[in-house]
Structure formats: structure tokens, C-alpha cells
Length: 233
Picture 1: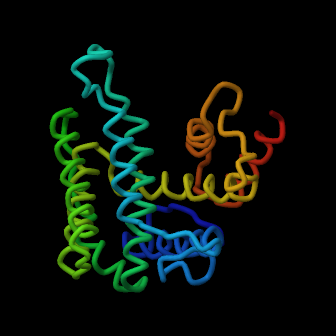
Picture 2 (picture 1 turned 180 degrees about the vertical axis):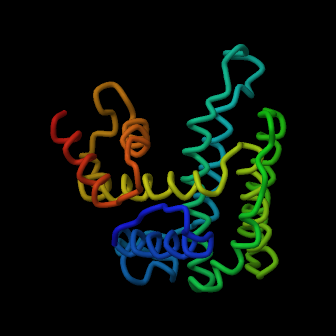
């Protein structure tokens, strides 16, 4: 499937494409029946915990520590990557609980948001923790209602807004990270043989540079560029 971002594409079609790609990636990584909560290696799957853990990585990209590196700067580019990683798991959770059309329907009304003018570190941290709180609450209570699912979506896109990650950029970065995740799985990520640092840079950084140099988002082209770069290491 070739994916491109054109001016005439709609939010609905972009959402549908992302959910299709996520379902395909989950099947490739975890097996055909991953929605049952067990992967092909008989390991439990917990998407809510995945979201919570990725949120902690997002917070680590802010200068929140009062005892260490107090003059460090906000790593906004990595925050955006963490938001894309969180999106992978949010979509996976929705796909576990419902189907693609309903997932698209739930998400679409929250994608029309305006980004804030400036970054507010306190707001980023607080809204991140609210998303984590929602997910942990569902997990602990073990109540997966439509309202609780929608609360995750609403809070996720609120977080995107205050991190100045607009929907088109989210879509572009998702396609890039989905391609990189597939590349990782194809090159020994699960087996522990994959090299994540490429010429002193994390593969995420290389992927973003390659992605932004593409006029259109093309999964096959990006995958080939990643492969060529990796083979030269």
C-alpha cells in the first residue's frame, strides 16, 4: 500500500489509513489474534500500560527535574515523536475494543483542534499525566466503556494541541514511524540484533530527516531509503 499526503485528502481518509496500517503492523508483530490480548509468543498485551509508559518518556523530554539539569531545554522534536508512539498504542487499544469504522468515527470529531501559540512546560506535563491517569484508571477498574475510550481520544488530542502537533504533521510522522517500526521488526528488533544507533544518531532522527526530504509520503520509498542507510552502517 502506498501512502501519500495530498492537499485533497481528508481527515477521515487519513484516520482510516492509519488504523489500517496499525492493524497490519500489529498482525505482523503480534499475530492474527492479537485483539484477544495475547501475542503469537503467548505474551500478554496491555495497550493501556504501553500508553502510560510512553507518556513517561514524553515527560522525560521536558525539564521537569528540580534536582538535575535544571537549565535543560524542552526537547519538542522528541516530544512529537513520543506523541506518535503514544498514538500507535492508542489506536491499538481502540482496535482491540472496536473496529476501524467506529474508531475513525470516535477520533474524527477531536482532530479539528487549534495549536497553542507557545509551549507551556507545566501544561504539557499536567496534560500528559491526565492522559496517563485516564488509562491507568481504566486498567485498574477494568471497565472499558465507550465513554472511557472517548476520554482517552479527547485527552490525547488536547495534548497534541498544547504540544503544537497539528493533525497533518501527526499523520506524516505516524507514516514515518510506522515504516520505521516495520523496518525494525524486519531487521531483528524482537530478537535483539537490531542496531538502533545509526552513525551516532538514533534511528528516529534519521527517519525524520529522510521523511522531511520526501515531497510526498511514500511508505515504499521511505522503507527503501531506511534500508539503504542501514546497510551502509
